Length: 87
Image 1 (cartoon, rainbow, N blue to C red):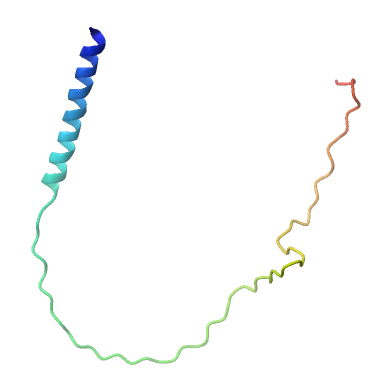
Image 2 (image 1 turned 120 degrees about the horizontal axis):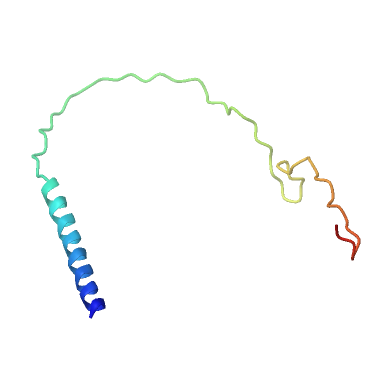
């Protein structure tokens, strides 16, 4: 009997939450008139800008070539333990 009552309370609480979200969403929405649009005419002049140069020179990746992004540091090998002698 307690599980049925708990389910009903949960269903009512969930329904109330959904209803509250719908009411809050509807109350925050307002229909405003669109602002009047006016057209203005402006004259602009364009000037040629300096050519754009890249700030960094990226290395080229070629198929079969070396990978320039490979790390140059190699880690030392793991220490070897002799079988049966663990300390």
